[in-house]
Length: 142
Image (cartoon, rainbow, N blue to C red; front, side):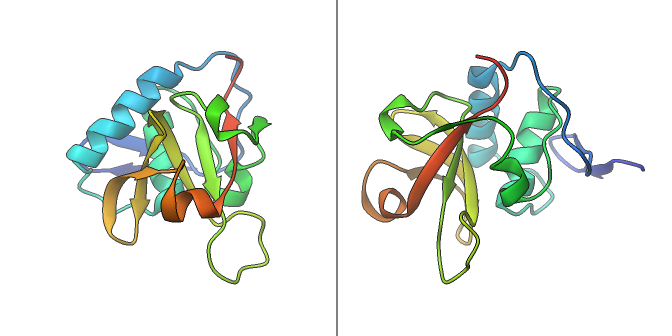
């Protein structure tokens, strides 16, 4: 299967099974996610594709969907324990799925996300996003 290649910044997204990850630089992924909020990629990605593309840029292949991404690492239910690079999951709307949205923690209670309002930093410790927070997932062994 050929990877899908997106425009600026150049990103390859491979759709398919995730591969186990031994070591992940979460701070590097968080930094890239924050940069992409300020300078979005040319391709309009949805939330889980944004997460997949950021991690792809640091050499980590993640699954494509929110539900698949929620199953890849150790879950963290206490938002005060979230580290930069952790995937932060939320539930919005009437879906019966346990999670419906994902973002990448960047520090200080914020996460980089592709929302309906564009690429932005969201606060998962207060307000709307805190009310919809479900858990985070630590990618790889860190």
